[in-house]
Image 1 (cartoon, rainbow, N blue to C red):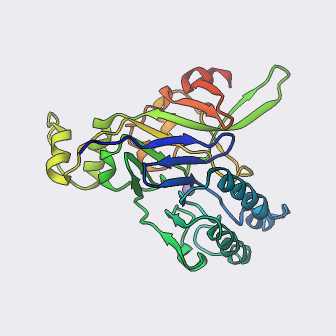
Image 2 (image 1 turned 90 degrees about the vertical axis):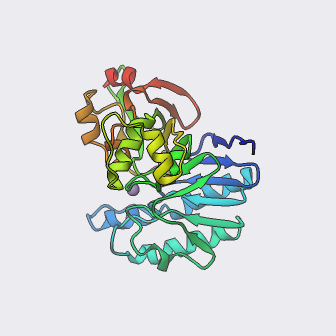
Length: 289
Ligand SMILES: [Mn+2]
């Protein structure tokens, strides 16, 4: 059986991706964090609800791209365990409106999505936390390990990090922009970390690709990790270029096992603005701080 390549393209200038495996067109967004404003009002900061603005933006993308499926890659809502009154209102409203426009809607739960099932209207599918595979692309939120079958994907896509770049311009103003991160991923280091996670013992010189094949019948192919910018652009982000260049510092600042596993070569990662502008690799931007 000949393998067909799965098409992946950012929907410029939005924090959204299109994945097309030849049979279905999927629109992917991540980190909507509905109810974020409500959690701020507890701190005395009052910002009007951004839900309808985010909804209008998503509806615009849907009418442009006409996807068969919408996949939300985690963090639909903002509070982690509890559910705020605003979330009881905004989450069902948001998904009811989207359901009218897209045939299938699927949610991969993130770390903020405790009890998400009770908020989602009927017809919205909840995928496992360890993610979904579409063709040669594996997608998961990023706060937990993915399904081991994802070793067989060339490209992994996560949210969770809310990546941004930040630097000072020549008068000293700080500029912060959301970015896409495309990082090379070392297949062997990733297999080693995942085998450890699954409590599979191996020897130092063992052929890990072969071991993954025999133990999990997966042909390891991972080449890169893409970190999606958050769909909610009011949120703070993690400045990818601001962290110290030393690996220890870089990884201390990131959460989630895949970025801590050291299989992702973040210094070599390419950064792109939402409009597609290529900013270069992280290691050159680190100097601009
Ligand atoms: Mn998250």
